[in-house]
Image (cartoon, rainbow, N blue to C red):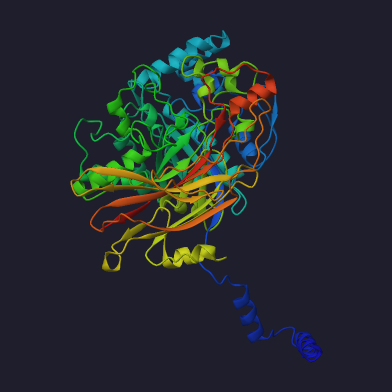
Length: 622
């Protein structure tokens, strides 16, 4: 030991003297060794970043009408961890800042209402703008709301914001994102929302740019006043990329209030989906927002009757305006799982899967604050923010009761670094996943050669990339038609609840051309296993103290892992697989409200919740 230590010491001293004698000519071999040592051995690995790709500020007309005054600047500041004063007067700060954010205000009348309040001189050349300004000065917010709802879906010239004003406001709004974007520290995306709503049926998309304001501001946002048809939106995005050299995508959301339009087998022109439509949709919409404030969109108990977790924060009363009641036949074309199944069927007929999307979550909050934890939920609009009576109000004063709102959701991105370019690439390749607001860490890989020992290795993610594909990827036929193997690893939110279980959901197209689905419990906490006769899994239990709005991590597991092989695999059948991670029960935000304010909560409101994460699928194509 002493001899070895001495020789090392002498070598270091010798190198030190060499460095002093040859300061202008460093030892090349030493430099090469140092560079080699400093280079990551495992290339291609990704880091986990958390964000919200769908948030509104006072620049959105509906947010402004419903009392939101937080600016786009304040939205980014809040996401970065700074304290802001909510519109209800409360100081608010995130427990943990986000890594990325897109403020996606509505394209229709973007920023107009905020300009009305400050008597922006640019409005004087616009007759309707002056009429609205007079209504605002008189305090007639109801009149403004009605005027907005009448105007938002029309393309008549008198209703349109003058081009010069639109360009000016968009240039200012997109520049705000550049102001807060710091590569490596925080990613601020430029974005907006296209708000198509045909007869009250939701077809909304948020539009996310990879680019900064220099490129994004060259084209003003495409609005529902230009067209209600998503195909026209995609054409506008194609024009933007062609003319600027930039990159952009669209993200659909809330199919659950589309009354069957979101994933319909027919286009808006009434014709059935064709190959051109399928290619365009797959190109421009790589991910789908499957969970957010207006209900969870994974599946519905009517569609998945054997899924005990299907009825989760379900909104199924009608379309977004509640003008048309929901009919059972609509549900098939509204939820992400059934859409993924429909995608397999379309692919078999058209050669392209129009619904080959990854899964993300976002808030769609119109408060300027991306809050998703049950114990700090600030609602949809400013008048939904914490108060003793908020649960008895209605969203927008006329829609669903506030207690039906969901404290959801977040997008998790597996990206090489925290930059616009890297996270945008992760979204496009679908290496992202959704959570209902919690920060569950989830890895999901598919391949042919994973072993039980792989998931236990410290570098299991590296093994995942070497032997297979990550979430969002594709598998083709293995050797001798072998069944694919999936490696999944989940760990709880460090500040949150333990895990109940990990499941893999499989969807496939059978030999008759019909779609099927099945849920496999691949990892269970607390040593549980299925009943030998029925296969039923006992519940994890419930530690929630409703009166005190507390729970205990005395049940469940901090981590769950599995390597699973599909026991019913048919190499001739198209299929997809995604992982779903379920937490143990915790108090819902309504229960926290009851404790904090002494509020009386509607007895129909759930008191507990089992938050969850959904990975993007991995597809198998023969």
